[in-house]
Image: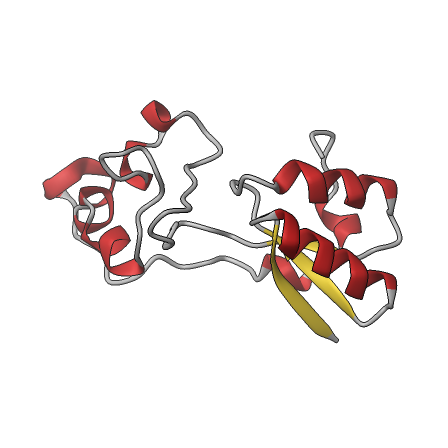
Length: 133
């Protein structure tokens, strides 16, 4: 099974995703904090037979096309850069204080990686249903 990545990022990505989904050639993962999420979410809600997963996203790497966290930035200050967007690179994410020092700042043991407990894109949309979509 082919997985199409980055639906929700822009209108063109959504349109291409929909076209290939309609042909039954792939399933897709959706980046929730992206600007065009609502368009692909509406399609997913109208087409419950299509298979969607969630693309976990902690960076916003484009220079002139960026997005922030889903939560209020004040509640997740370690996830955002000084402009309020998600960090631009994985290296910047790892350099932030919340990962370097753990939950207690510099007192923590430090981290060498940020694990993902499961691969959400492996689960069909039926397992990831939400009232907010």
